[in-house]
Image (cartoon, rainbow, N blue to C red; front, side):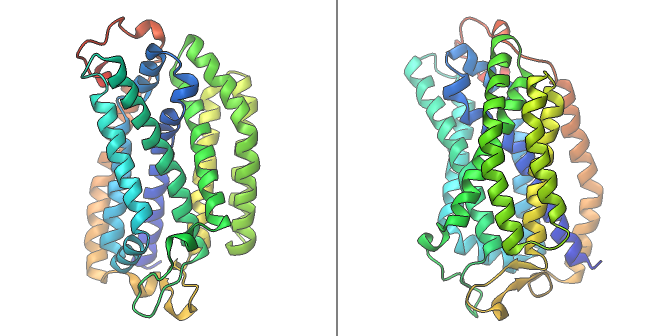
Length: 341
């Protein structure tokens, strides 16, 4: 396997890690109105992700950096052609970060309500737009001979892409509900378990249609395995949450996300961005990668640094593995940050 192909796989792995880890962060924020009916319960939700959410976002930064260095043409074409949706994602992530960090800085009900609204919007918007963006990558967009995307925003809001956005939103909110059930206790856990059981049905139906559409229209022979794996994993979530096996249920939502991302990248290969204008204008692994020397340097750097980052993040999850309940929340926020509670 050539280094360009290796880095195509590595970019896929980085985005997979991002969607798995940041996916439940999004899900927790999206569930604020449902599971966070009181300020104490919302603080429980925030504390489930408090020690890890910023580390989860590192996967996106690394994926973007790898994309820029390994496939500069892919990076340039995608980020210029998908400028508006990616800008909206960036703004939403910034708003969400600020709201999480500043929510506990002012002891005022209206201030916290605004921050909660920002967290919800900053979670819903990326959850939907990431699905729309990746569905358009697989479907293809109009690219001309100069490697510029000539599709407009309305072209990208096609039925397949919109279904992709609904799919990622539903799967992330299910992933988040299972994570809350895994990390919380008492009534918050009970409500999260019940919610996960209810969310599993629409998630299975919508995601099932999306992965089947992807497979039939763009998939390869071997990607049928990813379709079956994703469907089976989502079907098993409801049964496991009902049985009180949140850990196994969380593993299955993770498997479903991983299988779906593998399906998307597998459907792309060997293309990076298919052109609906002319197949001759497709961005491929071979015509859009950096030099062999650049890829060699990147490979050595990744070989040394990746294990360190993974071990540190695994240690963080282990240290903060305990469940959280309303009883752990102090009666008054004062000027403390939610991150430290």
